[in-house]
Image 1 (cartoon, rainbow, N blue to C red):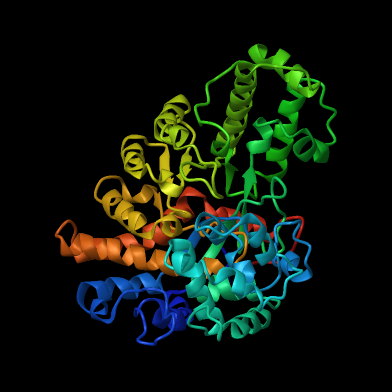
Image 2: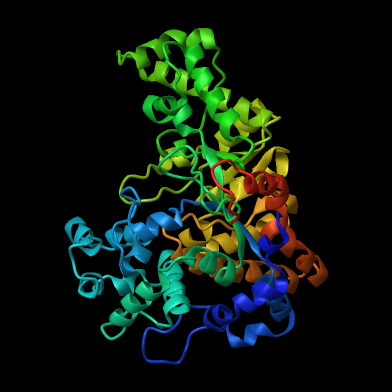
Length: 485
């Protein structure tokens, strides 16, 4: 990675100066909503103060985002992922789910995010539900972002015009780099594009990319994955060639491969030979009826084909586990099986590095044991800090005295809009500080040991696991751009 792309500890601390005052010094004494909670004044001396200072000085490698390209945000060509280009954009991913589960009717939610409704008038739609959701992790991330970006202490009748004015002022060319690097202390982010298998980003070393594999085996996605290759698919071997094409084109530039298939099924993939599923593939290709068991066998075969290609390219395999985004459809009876299925995967292909995402919340104790036992298992805390910040803090605290510290990744914002990443990063820094400080205060580790963990868990592990130095060099010369992030 080029020297000017690396964030020094000094520049990180300077960039986080205002944010630190907002987020880490705790609630104000104002009669209004006040700042999002933080580390209170009494905590910034002694052990907690030393740890906090280093955590603030240390850059993150952000290991999971769904960020839209900046130019698409600015010109409005975000392919339906942008609900409304106003202050409600900050609430449009994740906090919109809390709005629904707090009782906001679907029709009211649609109006809230509609570009047809005046931006200021939208506050009246949210106001009855805001007290119930403002302190969730999703709510706190948005509150921190609003305070840090727009200088507004909270959402209210009096502040909403200032929030909208701040949104319009901040949304300018270069605002991704300002929010991610300058304010959030993020050296680079890894993006799982939701619109195509891999996004050829205009900021390649800032917005590094995962290669999506889910469409290679679920479906399969004949148009999205087959179309760009120009391969005439008439057989299973042709589809293997399609998968090969994507790896040949992008494996050098991708940091990992990613699948969120756990939203639709258990991750209990089983090895299935090509001859067993060839006939099933023909049925699927020709849109002929087939059984659920046949469909699973085909998915399993293609999953392992893609996983083998990832291993050949030395790409870790990122898998969604645990909690679902959205509302009113998550089957916990299936999610509870994710950890057991994860161990089966680790045994099945020991030469593949699996990154199990989101700590499998709420079944996170089991994930610690997986990382402790399996050489090829790594755990990513992406999204976890805003699903449940207290549980995430407890998870990290327990993890660090149970499993190897070089196998944990501690931050991924997991957002479509960029602004709340700022709030999420602040929450993560607070949680990391508290987890380490509590371990020291309770006598489980020394202060020196805690301080030595900070660099690895915030960026060093990610740099090693995803070979980011090599990837940055490749991306600087990527054929789709000559720019660096």
